[in-house]
Structures are given as structure tokens and as C-alpha cells.
Length: 385
Ligand SMILES: *Cc1c(COP(=O)(O)O)cnc(C)c1O
Image (cartoon, rainbow, N blue to C red; front, side, top):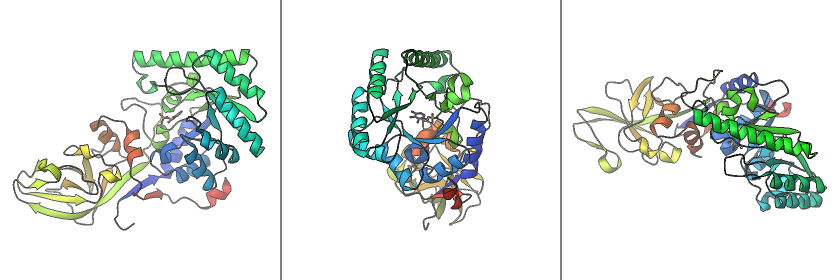
């Protein structure tokens, strides 16, 4: 596009990550690619097609709108919604053959009614709260009530049961590991109770990226990796058993270079003052594009391979960097979030500086940043699926 700011999405690296994660699984364990939040900012349509083509069995999203958008793109693969069931979405979910999460008898009754109206089955997974404290049945009585309601309904079909780990990214610590093990044991107990009561649970699943990477005792029948697909380890200092490749790079261009004299103020609030005579470059993106304002005086961009420090506050649409003594011209492309983990401009380092996780920076990349896939998504791929 005209401005030159863009996110480059390396679909070949995404496919590498899918395949390498799959290589950790027993052959009968399914892989659900988590593509919520526009595939963590990467572009849900393209990522879904690439992931399915690389061997993902199905897709997971957070909400019904995301599932509908994928269906509108023509994706026919199974899609599951992780979030709570909004009554207003029930009709669209059943109509489009999306798999819903249920956590109450009311959820089941609603889907049964909607299934009857559409004369279509409603496939569901029962969510069990094993210690995340967010969503799901909270004890055996609640779980058995939901399972019984499913059994009593004509249109609702039980496809799976699942839970979500709260501390899988802290498995290297004793406290994190023992909590995660406790969640797994509670889930095993819930499954045993359901099966002892005669319910057939085809697909049990609990593992996010961290659970998948930890060991096979967390894999059950299916895994739901998100961040690992996009090339990041769930915890920065975790040496995972496989080499994941970061998928996204955020790039922009230099729109101005000014030779400043000593003591000139840069950006809002005059947070930065030039030291001696400095060359200050203006870059064509800002916090509306997802670069946090608080990276002021802390972040780096790469200019012709050399890290240049951000100076002054990040503006809505622009930011400034110090390119003194560097090769830099107006029109040069700069890397703002690098996929190279060794770079000072790496997305992982920017997340660390901000006291957050790569997830948040990826999801924050603004809607006005065009996503460019490399290699280009093969149009024929659509028909192949
Ligand atoms: C987001 C999400 C995942 C993926 O988590 P990662 O840590 O990105 O692997 C898996 N399951 C559920 C229910 C989620 O909400």
C-alpha cells in the first residue's frame, strides 16, 4: 500500500511450526490451530488455510463472529468456539455447523431448540473449570447435569470435553508445575466420572502451546496450540524441544530525516532532547498501528540491519528514531518488530521491555496495517481443502 507500513506474514514458517508441533504428537492426536483474534494478528483467513494445508485438523476461535468470518471465506473445516455461548449467536452457530462450548444446562436447551428449528445437529464440547476460574462446570454434579441434558436432547451431540490451563507458561517453576499437574488430574477425574456414568466423550483436550510442548501426558485426544504456531515459546526462557520460527515481521519506512542541533525536543511532552548534533528519522507508524506508546526511549527499529533507538513518545501515526552515524535515507524500509530473536528490535524483546507477552503485541497490530503473505497464498489451496 501507499504508506509502506506492512506486516509480513511468513506462511512457510507457520507451516514449519505446524509440522514440527505435529511431530511431537502421537499419530491419533488431533491438532486444532488456534486462530482467534485474527490469528493473533496475522490474518485469520490466510493462516487458517496455511495451517490446514500443513496438517492441522481443525480450527479454534474465541467467538462466533470469528467462526462466521472463516465460513464466509469458504473454509469448511471443523471450527470450534472456545468462549461462552451468547444466546443471540446460537442460530448462526448451528446453521453454519460450528462446534460450540457449553457450560450449563441452559446452553444445551437453547442449542437443542435451535437445532430443532434448523433441523440440524448442534455439536458441543463441555467446558470444565479445573482451576482457571473463567468458564466451565465447577463440579461433578454440574457436569453430570449438563451431560444428562445433552443425552436427553434430540439435536445436541457431545463431541468433546475440555479444560484450559492457567499456568502452563510457568511449568519450569515448582509452583507452576504442581498447579498445572493438579489441573490435569482434576480433568482426568472429571473424564473418569463422565465415562463411569456411561457418557461417551469422543475428544478430550486440555493443552495450549505450553501443555503441548511439555509432554505427552497433556496431549489427550487433541491439542490447541496458539502462540507456538506463530513462533513463540509460551515463556521467554523456556528451551522447548523444537525450533519454532517467528512468523510475523512489522515493517515501515522512513519519511523524513532531520539533522538536529543540541537540545532539540522530540515528540509529545519533550521526553527526549537531542544530545549533540543528531540525525533523527521519522517512521510511518505509531500506536494506532499497535506500537505501544510506552516504548518511548526504550524500543528499537532496525535500519539497514542496524538497531536504531526510538526517541521520544510514540505518536498515533509516527515515531522517531535516532539514526546518527547510520546509513539511512528517506524511503528506506525499517523493521519495527523483527522475527529475529537475536535482534534488539525483536518482537519478543519489545514485549519483555513492555512487561508483557508476545501475544499482546501481536494481537495489538492495528487493522490499518496491511498483512502481506510470503509466499503468496496459493489460490488453488482453497479448492484443495
Ligand atoms: C487462546 C487459547 C488457546 C491457545 O493458547 P496458547 O497459549 O496461545 O497456545 C488454547 N485454548 C484456549 C481455550 C484458548 O483460549
